Length: 259
Ligand SMILES: Nc1nc2c(ncn2[C@@H]2O[C@H](COP(=O)(O)OP(=O)(O)OP(=O)(O)O)[C@@H](O)[C@H]2O)c(=O)[nH]1
Ligand SMILES: [Mg+2]
Image (cartoon, rainbow, N blue to C red; front, side):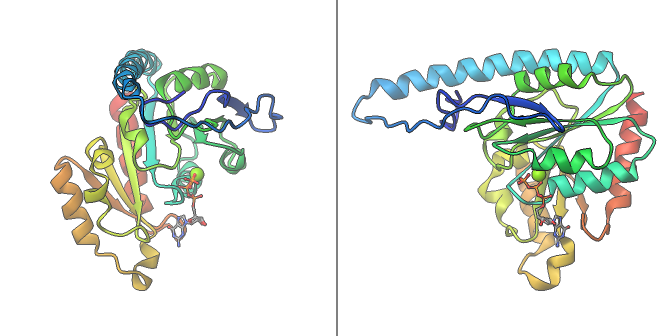
């Protein structure tokens, strides 16, 4: 159960599925009501939050050690639902032909994204978080065991579409990449600063739609830099391919640095 953001309810289990697996474990959704007249509840939830984040950090450190030992460069993709994480992955994986890659997909339900990645021929594991709205380090640890990752490879983790909660959970990744698409509005870095603060890279996606929407790229970059002045940007269209060569070069350079 996720008490840090209150998104999980007991009875909704996390499931791990490879492409073609049948769903073995589907949690029943549970209506959960709570009487907010009891003031003890809030004190208790703070303690649980500290425990959960502390435990997550420990597991993230273990994941990091595992990735380092196997020379696996790991990228955690975070964004709101629908900003283009899977589309970007589909394109990137075909552009990186020859580089051994694997993907962990995170969604509340469905195998949709894992099926899309499986079509590229790259090993993929789908994590369905049930009511949970983010991946945590322990889920990634379990998924890595299932995937049997190659040494000297590249692991992409597509987090659950959510611009808030995944920011709190270190997965042990090398780089965190936040994607914002131009249909979401250029004020998002100000409104959701935690996610931009916790990222290394900011991808501005769907630039092919710029003529049709009110989105000031320069303003968006400035707002993001106010939150995190270390951010590096890529402006891309995952569908048309514009801007993707620079992103692929950055990935290849990072893999080289690591190996
Ligand atoms: N015009 C345009 N559409 C895009 C672009 N990238 C993605 N899309 C579209 O945006 C929609 C969502 O893309 P996805 O890749 O599924 O987004 P996602 O972030 O993986 O979504 P979730 O996993 O549900 O959070 C799809 O209809 C894509 O075709 C782009 O660069 N330009
Ligand atoms: Mg997706």
